[in-house]
Length: 337
Image (cartoon, rainbow, N blue to C red; front, side, top):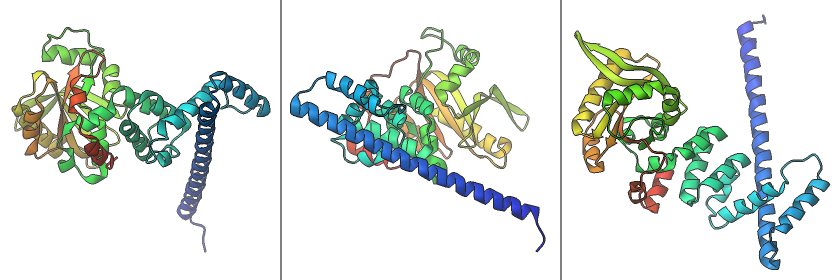
């Protein structure tokens, strides 16, 4: 049988894929064993402290003894032993989460149990890492950007308007409130000034939007039958493979904004998106919004869009606490992660 280069190249590609799969599975197994070890050490520290009333000095001494015994091995510093103790204490009362923590790395775990103190919030970030493969830096950015609160309180019609295969990723991609603390304006500013300040700080803006967004342009021109229209900001989301139209509003959300956004999205979908791209989505970013009015405005909208607010101070709006759904409703939302 003659040698066919294309067939051989596919054969090599298949072998490489199988090797990578085996390597990944081996790393997963090692990680599970490591997390199980850290859990057991944390458990033993907690139990001995309770039984004998040992204080902080026992961890310092234990660290020295372990490092003398296992020279060259990292992971047994007093700081890490305290983290193991905290790790065990954080999850011992939540058996539902215990199998999940073994699916993510130790560095991911540290970030979650040290920065998130609600078990439902922890579950959200753990499940997101497992499903979306977030790196440590992406996880840190998501936590600092209040992704959990934003998802639970976010307002969009994505559940009804987007295909299931990328619906969840779209919901995670849009926040309910954006922190534009890089802006140098006072609370009183025009939409033009807001847009120009964002353009001047485009890197900070994209970091706040999310790591998968790329900037295409501002005042992006679209034309229909010799009539010109301009979209405030046009972005592209790499994972969604979608154009993202953004309208900036410095006041309260108005229902007619949704109609205008639907027009923009229709034009983008019919005339501007590439054949390999998914339908465009829209984000209307306002200074304030009435949540009930937003719900009605999005209810009968035919195309995918969300409505968010922006703040110019680096703090989570107080109304989030009253806005979050009940624990049962949150548990239902977590099923989609």
